[in-house]
Length: 76
Image (tube, rainbow, N blue to C red; front, side, top):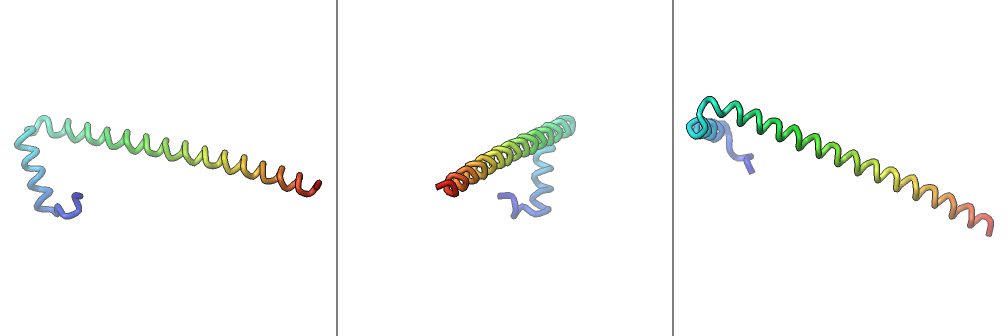
């Protein structure tokens, strides 16, 4: 989406933001955006780790059931 902005476009956006929000609000907005991104990354990492844990549990259960089926097949 923003891959074609380039340096001049970025400078223009920063100047417009400075005019709209003023020099006192701009650092506060930047800090809020940074905190939001940090929380998003943290949540995404937690979600990913939860999914990986669930997958590992399912793999373990499948392996146990596979071993049970093999034992039953050997008895037959």
